[in-house]
Amino acid sequence: MALTQLTSEALQSFLTSHPGWTHEGGMLRRTYEFPAFLTGIAFVERVGQAAERADHHPDIDIRWRKVTLALVTHDAGGLTSRDTNLAAEADRLFKETTGQ
Image (cartoon, rainbow, N blue to C red):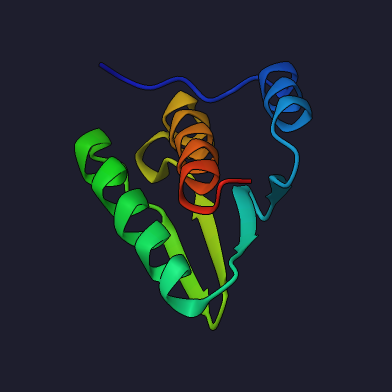
């Protein structure tokens, strides 16, 4: 089944309901900050597990206590529901990991 790119309205709706996420360079991006390096690493492990289950893998950049995720569906040529679904899951995992 081919994935359909998000409409600009769907993208704006996602960004409005998920503060912290931005649309940059054709990708969804968010940087999460953690109280300690290993808390960020635990978050990355959980995001990795969710990504593997979804067969959709983000770019992950780890810088001390900050973790940046970047999402795009390359084979669809842009953003799709796979990106917004994984982004929403990452937000949920962040809250679980940090209690925020």
